[in-house]
Image (spheres, rainbow, N blue to C red):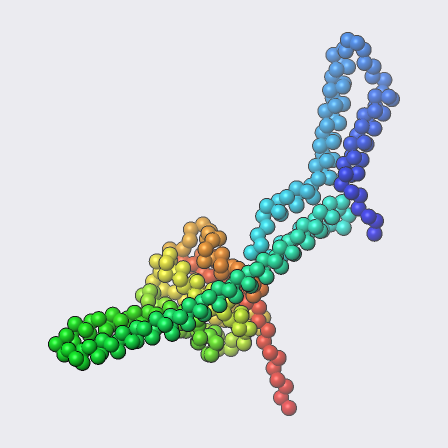
Length: 325
């Protein structure tokens, strides 16, 4: 395969050919230039100059078209949507720039995935630490307050009715601390799996938000890597949080479906939707980053007839069926 002509020499050749043709026309044509210049001679020169400039513009536009495509792709590229590459043409002299650009995207995507993993690992470690402190420190402190109030009520029966209201407030606070601790550190996910963890999450969400929740979980879900299950759980959690904060919905459906190649999480509400397009910031951006780290595809789109659908498609490999002897 012949080596592509560098862009510099390609542009140089275009201009050299045009100048050569113009010089040949001046040498070989019968046109003469007098001083002062006659009108017909001026028109001839202007026509020749115009034709030369137009031909030069057309040829240079064709030569520099790959640079225009490269600039457009560089403006459109989004590292949260990997795999965007500029097509390589076998005979294009711009291939060196194209290949360098594609290689740069490879490096940036690898670095972003690695930094994203480190950031999310640090976040999960911090969540676990906060959950442990809430459970062990704040939870035990509130439990001690309840026991102390019981002791006071035993010594002062006349104040029992007033103390009961205080004890109920402490119990509510203790329940809230335990709920936050569970959301920060989903122990059910580690012990009972993704479906059970999502069941607990949606039950708590429905109780706290007042939104009716419908669950549809495929009983044949394949086993997923613990890191993948955690990412799916967090994306479902963030999706439900967005429903509670922004959707003004009365019902939300959370489903998990599976086939031979993918596990699909869907969070669909009947709220007000997001207008023309969701804003790529905050929670939605965090969801996309989690999806990127596990090689999944996240789609946020309007639901039918109204509301919003969050759809996560996770690659899954089912174990081969055991042979029957």
